[in-house]
Length: 205
Image (cartoon, rainbow, N blue to C red; front, side, top):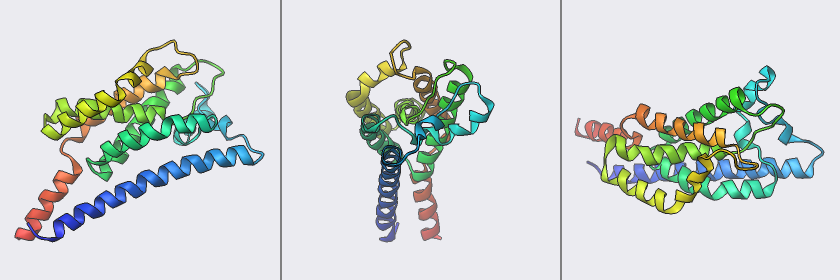
């Protein structure tokens, strides 16, 4: 152990906060452009079973239907994304990518015809699935505590997994949630834990 390790951890926390803020600013900026300029970015959402729409799985999470839609996703993204980020920056991006792909592909394959799907909610439900299931994977006290906090704050959000709600893409929510669970199983040890162990070994060497 050396005095450089706390500084390294603080640097990673700072990087994580900067990434979260950057994504939030980007999403709000895109919506502002959509409102102020004569463009229709909402039309770039996912259109089920249209082959030319398949690549839009990548950009759809950054698009929203109005500022109220962005606002509704901002707080859960910051909280759940931030809790996911505590496991490491690599973990955050891996969970985000898996959730975006699983929810986007499910919508593209099974979504209602002639509909357009967009928004961060599939990724947010991915964080939710990851954080809840992580506690069962590693059984660490920190993971269990995070699970309890998430359930206390977002238990009502789980209703978004139930089909039949008007204007809600439950397919994206459900498969984003499953993607988060898959990410929890796939990732194994936390990135931060691995980095600390490598730092210990290097300093002792």
